[in-house]
Image (cartoon, rainbow, N blue to C red):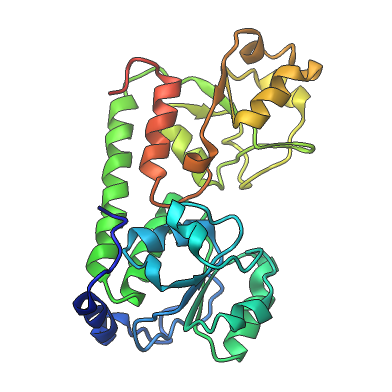
Length: 292
């Protein structure tokens, strides 16, 4: 239901006419601190962030997208949107060539120059740094307002929040296993408390062994992982193969006990509308047979 597209002229007219809903003043800023000033609901949107592309489809506005990154492949309909390349240091000329009336960027320092160039070219540009679950709620409500549908933005955010609360309640009284999240192999990268993935572990009833590190994705050593001795290792399909075949991991108790948990990266890999589903999937892995 969340992914229904606007298919009637009446719906499009209502979205276009909701100018009071879409107007923002310089008092409101994005995650670069730039003012948000959008005077009418946009109809040609470039989203250079997989999380916001997913979100725009959930808001029923996928038909307004005229550009995405090559990583934006969810939902399936996103593949039909023109691929404009990378979302980090994007090709500004290619973006302008799509003639957008709104561009949404990931607010990393690598994208600061692109945001400035797009604004200088007269294109409304909005930058979000969605690293935490609360950031997603904010993005859903803000983008919903900009697209002329505050109510739908709130519904999407509230739906995800309800699912996360339900998962937390289901795992609250269960024993909390310690886990290591294997993100990358060379260098070895994991998840710290600066990431929404750390929040997902907590909601799903686990304990991140690197939750004491404030970074989003810190580099660590195998030796330190072995010392911290997690009960489970979380990783994707390719990561699972690497950990299983790498002799350096042979001494890990989680490897010896065959407690390598393989997650669907399409579900857990973006802080967007599937956050609730991601938490549920982790909870079932941490607590087999105990989560409905």
